[in-house]
Image 1 (spheres, rainbow, N blue to C red):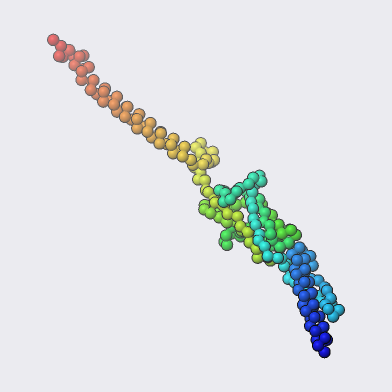
Image 2 (image 1 turned 135 degrees about the vertical axis):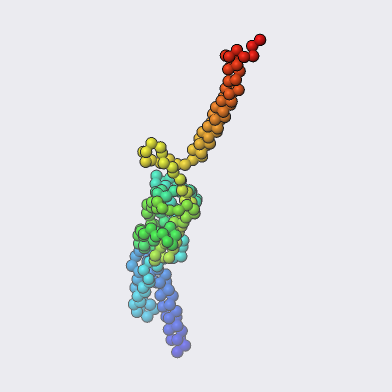
Length: 218
């Protein structure tokens, strides 16, 4: 009786170990996009089927990197402008899952499907009405619940109309302000010179009249 009980206990232990091993193996297959189920036999020769949720993946982290439209590196926290083009790549997501993109909770940018290797790629144009300040672009895996972000700073360039009615515009820079100041100084100097010349003429006028009339001559 004792030997039979130990044999049954050993079978149950072996069966539990086998089920655990099959579950781990199946979870790994699910992460690679394979069928999320497997079949094996326990110690009694009975067939056992184990199923795991779709997109089951091992623990890990996702990452997000963006480059300029020409492929140039942007570095960390780059300065960008509304309308700039970005090429962004997120890695570490579950194969085939939908990855949602957003510029904060109030600015969704749609979603993209990750490849079987867990990579999600998308070219993004920054909205024209994006305000100045620090912004965060986020990729969120809908099945894996993994998240990756890319931070940058938005700068707004003010423009002023170009003269001549052409309808164009130019950036407002410090050079424009310096030019206006110089023109103002020039007008002040010119006005001072004209005033001084007028006073000199006024002072000379009486002497000229006396000489013409002959007064004051000995």
